[in-house]
Length: 202
Image 1 (cartoon, rainbow, N blue to C red):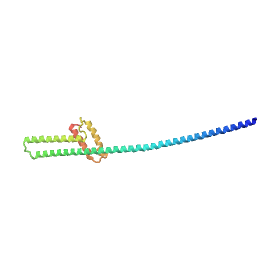
Image 2 (cartoon, one colour):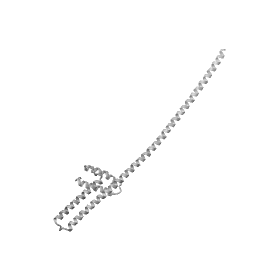
Image 3 (tube, one colour):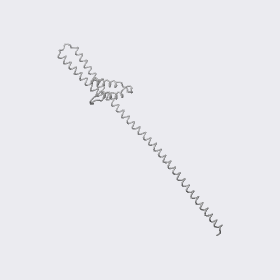
Image 4 (cartoon, rainbow, N blue to C red):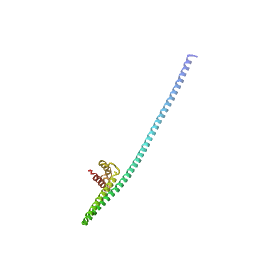
């Protein structure tokens, strides 16, 4: 075979090799572009799923927080209603006892002025009865006041503890805090006065 024929065959082989290499590179480029495109789509899908899950989780947390807050508020209102009813009953009993004690003292004074001719023994007995009635009335009023303040069974009862409980109750029923009835605050003040007088506190 001549040199020209060898040159032609060699040229043909180079051309075929270049075509094959070009095809391989083209296939690789296509494959890489597909992989990159798939990776981008996968990343976008993952980010979308994360964002969607985050929004749903945030909504669920908001709903759960609102529900728990509503339950806590209902429990607080129920407790406040029970406390107010307890205070009202205690104060009503306290006022009734004080009123009954005042009536007994007035009746005793009236009996003393209407019949000045009673002998000394009856006067002493009536005086003792009056003092005993006053002591019983004061003890009953004190017990009612302690029960109203929620300090029943607290030993020792101190002035500091009384002040602390007064602050807790008055913050709930004070008219300046929006409580509609002023009588509760007045009755709490009366109860505190009775307890302080009984112990000699200021």
